Image 1 (tube, rainbow, N blue to C red):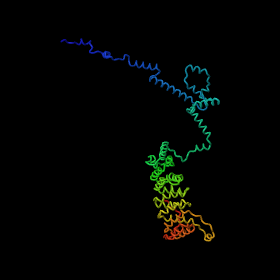
Image 2: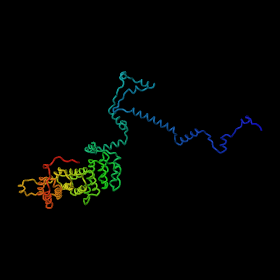
Image 3: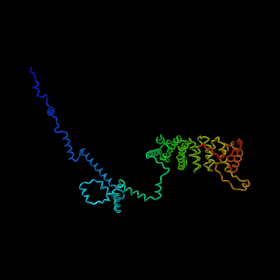
Image 4: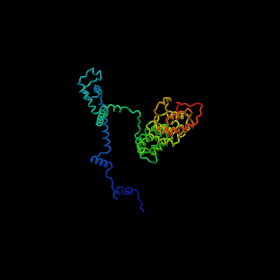
Length: 459
């Protein structure tokens, strides 16, 4: 067996080169370097009208530098209203040799060199033309384009058409105005639309948080309470009366419930009250002070028909009201001018048969004594003038007082009341009032009570 030396294998290749294997198997090799292909591609793009990224970047940089130079020139070109030219600009410049030779041809005075800068005024006509040019180009005070000019002209035209009175009103700032965020206004306007068609179900959560807001009155106005359905008024009454204190609940009752009460009775053909509004009145009595001060007393102070008083009094008759609130409300009604509607509420409160304090009882006595005519007997005999007839509701209220409180009045008060019955006699009710007054016993007190000027304030 022959031996193989190193010299024999030195010149031989152990395997074929890789490019030969690939070429034999049908592969393709890149004949040109990669950067050459990239340059050919860029050249092809330039021929087609496209620029590569580096070229675009250089162009943008050059454009930016040119824009900066233009801005610097414009800033340096800004001058005041009255253009002034100085000689300092010539001194500060660096001249070339050729410029220095041209500049030396001019004669310069020694006084000019010693004094330094000197101002030269331009002619007035030239200054006006220069100012007009600046205004037209917009170089004095920022950008001024065509749209700004058009808007300024429109505003001037509108101001000229407006009268002096209207312009003065526009200039005045509103004192009590409240600015709500646009999102809040948009949200609660949408809630108002929901409440205008509400019949049953849960209220929106945004509406439930209204009583917790500080300016709930302003936000409530956005929802347009006049357009609410009666069902929504009932739910809102429960929400506000139960969550607000009496003074705040009074505002809701007066602004929403009272207005809807009057509107409903006026607009219906039979002048009746909607069932849900009737329930709302009963719910408002959960806060008696809010009901009396926000509904009952404002209703009586304004125009109130007997029909409205009868409907509202029926709510009061069915509900249970604390005696202290009822006695104060009764005292307030007794001190007002006589109206048939007011007498309806007086009668209902008397028929609730409360153990009223003596001060309120005395107010009742003086109220009925007010309708008698105090004159001498001789003048009464000679006078044939008759007192005007009182409505039946007044006689019914007098009878209710005699039946319930005949044992809580003094003898002097009973005599005055009997005289009132004689002068204001009613054929059907008068004898019954007299019989009740005479059957009563006198109030046991150390002295006869007198009318006190101090009012009970339980609200």
